Image (cartoon, rainbow, N blue to C red):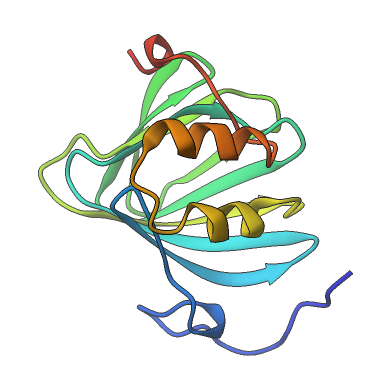
Length: 149
């Protein structure tokens, strides 16, 4: 198990200088260890991650700027700056920036499982179907499109 390295991951940067572009959204890893994986997202208006399930991980979102609409276990909820969203493993969830302003949020997942490897593989892919296929190989299972309605 990799130990958590002490230090600071500066604003606007990723741990180890890494950044991912996944279907147009920018992600910055903030802390990486086997027990947890933290990353920042920057979502422009209209961007989203469809409803999906992490069967082996708990996930949290701390909204830092803007507003995110979430479909959480079949129910629409809204999280604003300063709100913490809790998503236990196995609960379907997706997030959507339905506002007219950018949103920024800190996500963390515990344990990390295969998420860093997944983000590395998804970086710069442009085909959503390929993203879904690769995600399933990394324990992130997307639901059919009607789950986003």
